[in-house]
Amino acid sequence: MSKKSKTKVVLFFFVILCVIALFNVFIYYFNIQKTVNVSVANQGIEVASGIAINIDRDSLESFLASKKKSREFSEIQRYLLDSRQKSGAMYVYLFEVSEEGDAETLIVGWPRGTEVSFPIGFETNLEQEYVNKAKDGESFYTRIIEHPPYGAYITSAAPIIGKDGSVLAYIGVDNSIALTDQISSDVMKNSLMMMVYQGLIVFILFGIYLMMDRWYQNYTRHEVEDVEETFLAEVQSVLSTVRSLRHDFLNHVQVIHGLLRLDRQEAAMDYIMSISEEVRNVGRLPYSLQNPVLLALLQIKAIQAKNQQIMFDTNIEDHLYEGVKSSDLMKILSNLLDNAMEATVVLQEEERYIQLQMKEEFGVVKIKVKNSGSSIEKSHLSHVFQSGFSTKRETKDKSVRGQGLFIVSSVVNQYNGTVDISREGGLTVFSVTLKKRIG
Image (tube, rainbow, N blue to C red; front, side, top):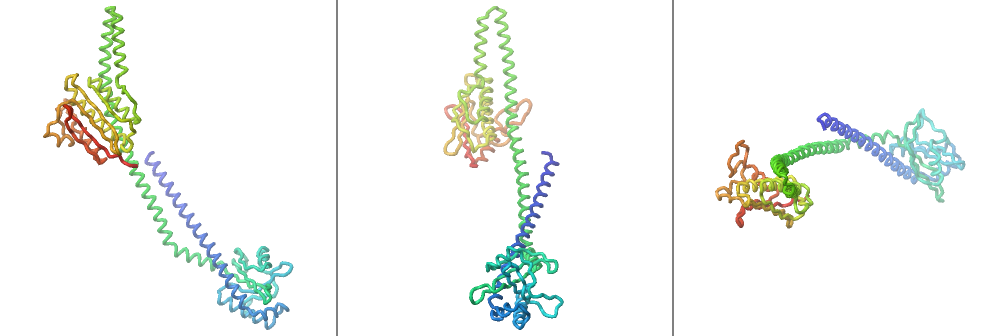
């Protein structure tokens, strides 16, 4: 992905986060407002219930009998007005539900002498579902009622129970939505710092994600380059082997051509059969392995050993060797086997011998590479794993040497392992242990 594309993706996710944050604020405010409305409505029911309990029932029954302005009317009106002032409600009033199912306002707690007047028996704004609740003698509160003259409000109501247990009338309490809006705004202001803090946490986590993603990409790129470098070295080695095989192939062709010119067809056929069997066995291992990278590497090394007339013996337990990265396994085995081949190729053909042993025990991978080359001087043992140190002569091309065993040591240290050099039965032995990583 190009840098421009990555920037677009980051901006896209940033915009998505902002949209989600704004949506979250909207939902939060909506829930607060809904909760406040319900709280105010329930509080209105409690106020209405208190008023209904304390109202003078004798005066109420006397008024209900006439439903005209009278002394009882004035007493109830003053009581409702006092209750309105104490509760802070928009309106406190007395209403009843007729047998026909109509809700009529009888007395409103409102000061006398004002321009607003409320006649006895005018119709309320209650919807039929709430009228039915009133007929059943239930306390209730309404949805938000939009009424142009009075604005938006919520009505809470509670029944007035007579001495005989019947419902005499209802107390209605109207609370303006302006009150709930103010409470909601206050709650939002008080919650603002918490919301900002939560938003910062989200953006910090997003920033951490971007940093981790960038680190992982760099790490992956480094690992890929590392593996490519290791494979490239092996490919170059294989190409060198192929060039050598090509030279041998030309020699074989010349021999066959000579035998055919001498009219010795049987000898030519025997020669062809012998080299065919040899070619079939080049790089062939007498077993298969679960780990494909390990199998491929050993096939390459077997070809190289065959080309250099080195006897290559292997004793490997068939495991996936999980817990050790394949690239690290390649570095260790490739460098140890290359080092062994360089040590043995200078010997007579019949003396050239390499053995690879590999197994896993109790979460520890154990590797041994033995070669018949000359022993390493004791004075060199403490230096062979240092970068740039080599016991071999400098090549004609003056290429950098002394890196193979240093790479082995570096990889082994990553696994808290060990690498040792010893001499057993006339063979130089490199012993490596690796503690498998979990996860």
